[in-house]
Image 1: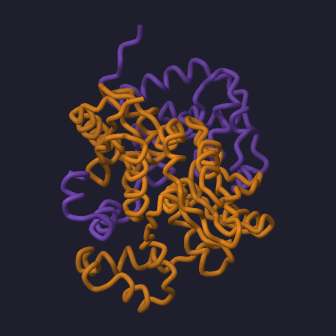
Image 2: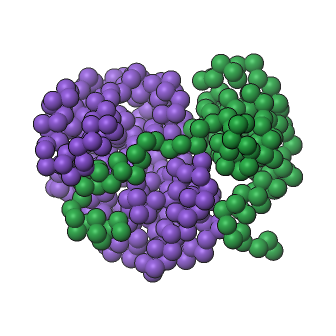
Image 3: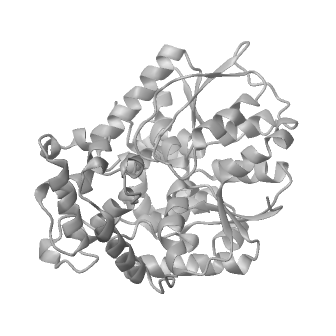
Length: 283
Length: 144
């Protein structure tokens, strides 16, 4: 596989800069030269099903930008972006690159990665980790790949569970709230029965929607890339989770801080971001 | 050899024509769906009728109420793809059905059965979070 790649992290993952930075750290650690690309300027257009002209424009623009990178290899973090590129964007554009998933690439170089995971996970003798799974990402069988990667971490005991939820990640379930509630309850029940210390999320939207469980459940919610970088001796800071766990409106505002609220825009923060940060997972 | 579509709409038209020519309306895709239990409107639904309704949407004709109920609970679980004996990407069929139900393919707005509006302030929120999580240099180099 290529040594130079475009790392397409997507849009919604920007809530978790820690995930983006850890993913880049991991790719570089296994010898890959990374050109990161993401945010609104590289949107795939999957949210624009109600406006196909906009969806097409966004898709063409993003493919043209990737072609200009000249890496010939685009590695996608987000399963929605991957799916949209495969099912739609690639059908009407001249994509001059191969598409793969982040977990596939990292898994292919797991021997190199393993040598760098020298810091033992801490939680007494063993840290029990349970993978939070969805079964909807049919294009890439991502769960076994991530389980293999987690097994590389010294001190981690990967606990088995048959629990796997519909959709390709939790955000897909948000449109059917009862299903998200069921999926959340299933995670909590499985973590309780396996006595997991940590629930490892695969994708960013699961991290976004489940991280606040730490406020009421006896386990941590951590994305797997952060568990891997931690094992490299590079702990990460999940600001989004910190803000979600702050509790009250005043506490969230204090945690986010005036400077960042000003950068986001006070009105936007009050109307759209603060309500999101105050929302709790339902189970 | 089929020529590559020049536009998204061209591709969707090709996909719709291919799906309509191959779908036997057996209903296996609907039967495999893990989400149907989340809609009261689907508890007694006849699988063949639901699929026929989705195919109506593909032909820019409003489909039956059961088809709308199915379109609304799809969370892209992929089970329908594995279930189709004809090898149709049934999940994509449902997605294109959703586009039609939003009025994106030509169904008059008055007959649209789903909202096509994305979350309020979607990209403004994305950009706002970027400001808090990335450096200015990263935003310039990675996101422009």
